[in-house]
Amino acid sequence: MINFDAFIGHLRYEKRSSANTVSAYEGDLRQFAEYIEKILGVTELEKVTAGDIRTWILTLLEDDKLSARSVNRKMSALRDFYRFELKAGRVKHNPMDGIQGPKFREKLPEYVEQKDMEKLFSVELFGDNFEGRRDRLILELFYATGMRLSELLNIKRLDLDLYNSSVKVLGKRNKERIIPFGNRMRELLTKYLEYYVENIAPENENFYIFVAANGRQLYPKAVYRIVRKYLDMVTTIDKRSPHVIRHTFATHMLNRGADLNAIKEILGHSSLAATQVYTHNSMEQLKSIYKQAHPRA
Image (cartoon, rainbow, N blue to C red; front, side, top):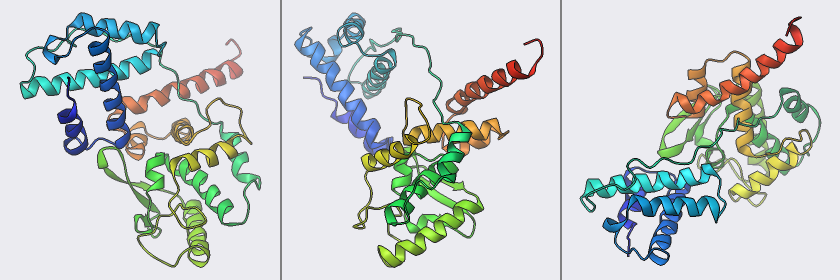
C-alpha cells in the first residue's frame, strides 16, 4: 500500500502550504494510488513506471474527461511527491522524469468592466442595516485591495491601521503583507466599525471584521453568495466570484498605468510571471482602442 503521510506532513508543517493546497494534493495522490493498485495491480511505489503514469493520464483525459489544467495539477502533485520520496531515499528513480503534461490554452482572467464597478457602488443596491453595510464593505475592500477571499475572512480589528490607511493580511504559505488603501476606504471602514461596535459587539482588537449578524465569523460560501448577488445586478460575465474582483482590481490598476511589480507585491504573488497574465487583458483593451481610433486600423 502506497503511503503519502510523510509527504502530506511535509506540505502541512514544513512548507506550510495552505489547507486548500494540502487537501488538493492529498486527493490527487490518493486517486493515483487507487488507480495503479486497483486497475494496474501495482502496490509498491518503486515498481511504478513512466508507462503506468502515462496510462493514468490518458484515463483522466479520456474516461474522466478532465481538463488539461486539472490533469496538469494532478501531475504537479505527483511530481512533487516523487521528488520528496527520492530525496528521502525511499525510491531510486523518478518515473515522472520526461513526462510532459497535456497542453492547454491559457484563458485570460475574466474581470468586470470599470463602468460596471462604478455602477455597483453608485447605485443604492445595499441596505442600511448591518448586512447591507457589511456586504458593501466586502465588495469595496475586494476591489480596493485585490486581496484573496481567505485573507479577507481572517481580518481582525488589530490588522487594520486606519491612521496609515493599510491592512495586514496573511497570505499563502502564511506570508504576511501590508496592503494600502485610499481615503474612501478608510472612511467606509471607520463608519462600519462604529456601527459594528454599537450594534454587534463591543470594541475588541481580536474580533473578526466580517461576521454574520450573530457575531460569528463569515464562512467562504456566504461571501461567494454575497459577491455573486451584487455582481449579478451589474454584469453578465460568466464568473462572478471574489477572485474575479481580484482580477478586476489588477486589470484596472494596470490599465491606469500602475507598475507591474507594485501590483505583484499588492497581490502577494511569489513571482512576476503570475502577475504578467494581466498584461494580456491590458493589451486587448489597447487593441480595441487602436481599432476605434486609428483611421487605417
